[in-house]
Image (cartoon, rainbow, N blue to C red; front, top):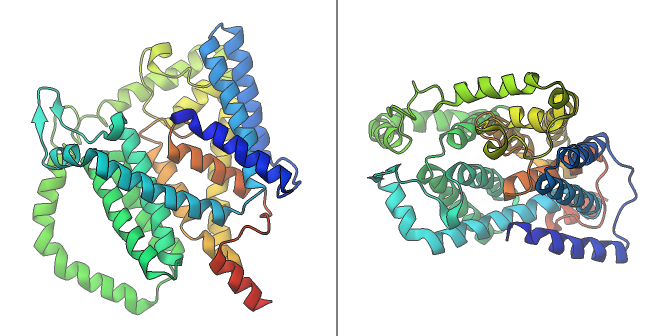
Length: 378
């Protein structure tokens, strides 16, 4: 199922080409960097005889080609709307299929293996936090933009449920990144009037003393804040140790330092440990120069999203895109899934990055609400 998006996206690309919906924009700098990284990965892994990683590099390259077609066929806001609807469907699906395991995880249950964490459909709990943490922001954007009460209610319920999934998975990095993204959203993107901020402050003053004690007790239990192995004094659940090993591995081999070891060569089966940091993984996989460029284009995409969200007109529909990138970039400090196509969050983030990088947006695919606004303005 993970690879099923490729044939579907291929068919969508063929349809877009036949209908002449693909805008002939030149490759952006971000796309060039990603294409070079994929080709370099294929060459390095083939030279090292890691043919299974060569196959992944080829699939990654093919995905980039289809992404380039997609982002030239539909505007970014259309992509975001689709992602929000997909997030709602995946959240409801996991609730229907895994409701019993969800209740067990929320009860802070421990067995011989330790805390029972929510792993819907066998997904790693850290990936659960990444997927549903990003889903919270995607659905929050639709809550702000939609004019339909039914959609707003559905998205609000989906947001709350996705947040519950993050907590049930004990995905502390994702929860922390969501808190940081929320602060960023109120500081930079949600332009509320002063009275609204005063009302929110008053509500916090009244409600926090009533719930903060019980809430902290519950969160400290489900996030294992006082655990010997996952507590606040555990060095990030041992991450500081593997981070140091990862950094040392980057500079230990001049060839890896210059060209990288190829996509996914930073996994445990190849280097003996998990890096638990996306930035270290990118540098190990792609080398110091291309790896730094990859990290740079993610940062640039975040800043460009902020600039666009502050513009008037149809770019207002890009609200919370900057917040989304803040979440992903902060979460990537503690997990290794930034540059990937194996989970919905990393995949959609790549498409968002590429869409932002081409500058101009395709016409003819805007959402109904903003298309009508554009006609009214005309």
